[in-house]
Image (cartoon, rainbow, N blue to C red; front, side, top):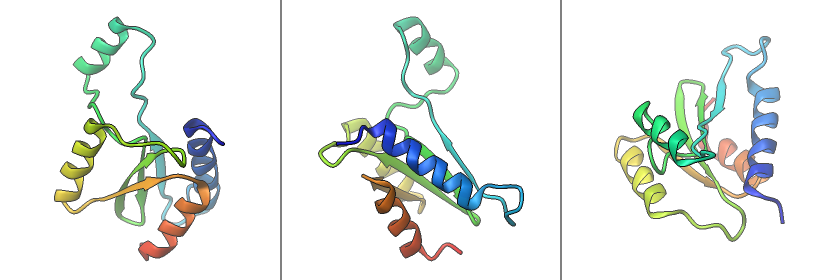
Length: 115
């Protein structure tokens, strides 16, 4: 089974090559939110500078739409903080996707009709 990191890497590489090159108009954006820390001191610094517990792994700006993407393995489960973040962003009418593979991401993107 692939790790969350591997799935996320596949999504980022595919999306950047498909929608984020200089030749693309408009040029879309995908980026990760690094929310892990090597120690408590680094964690406290990140919290002080805006780290938000439960934030999605990826944020995608796709043809004027903002999509928050949480990456999980086939058996992975959202934490309570991740569920809370999902609730906050969906209440403001943003897209929040729980994605388990590159093909899952591609299918969701195609279904979204954000073109």
